[in-house]
Amino acid sequence: MSVIIFDMDGVIIDSEGVYLERLKEFLAYKGYSVAESDLLDLVGSNTKRDKVKLRELIGSTFDYENFEKERREYFKNRPIDFGKLFMPNVLETITELKNNGHSLSLASSSPLRHIHKILDLLGVSDCFDYVISGEDFKESKPNPEIYIYTRNKYPSTKIDEIYVVEDSTLGITAAKEAGLKVIAKNDNRYHFDQSSADYHIDDLLEIISIVA
Image (cartoon, rainbow, N blue to C red; front, top):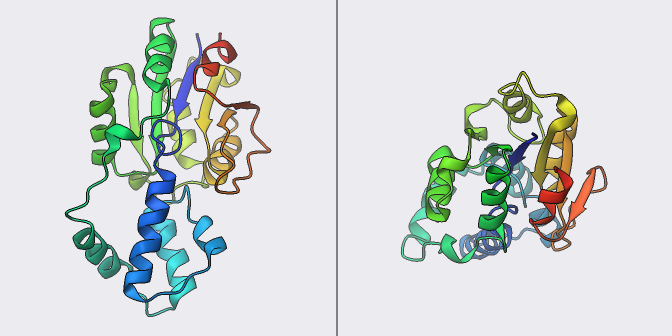
């Protein structure tokens, strides 16, 4: 049986666009002018990388920690309804893979508490052997460390039987540099470079036949 390692944002939940629009709204509220192309470079990113990139875009005096504090306060009364953002057939896909005897893990750049919130909401927490957050590593994607760490959780599985499901350029790069096969969830909205992926899918259910 195969091991399938899922990313979360853009794979399990269609959250990338929501995060982008909220970032654009808050930047405008704060009076910061950032080009659309530069903001697209932040899609699929992570907190550590965002801190560096926004400082480059806005200026060296930019206080990311205060920016994030103010942003949380700004959206306090407008929480994201993640229950409406699950990808089509994600529950069916995860359940079928598990029932077929495959091993599943999740490796996301998101904070661990948020990851567990999403998995609990979907009702699939028990389907995953390991749930791993990029916040536990010095560098997150595109650094391959998170996928190397997850891969090593399955020492008896051949590396060509381990698949990663990703969408973003950063995530695909990390997985490939970890020596893993990549199944890319097609997404043309954010100019991701998915060319290095081994497989491309439009529907998560396609994973089942790929790993069979």
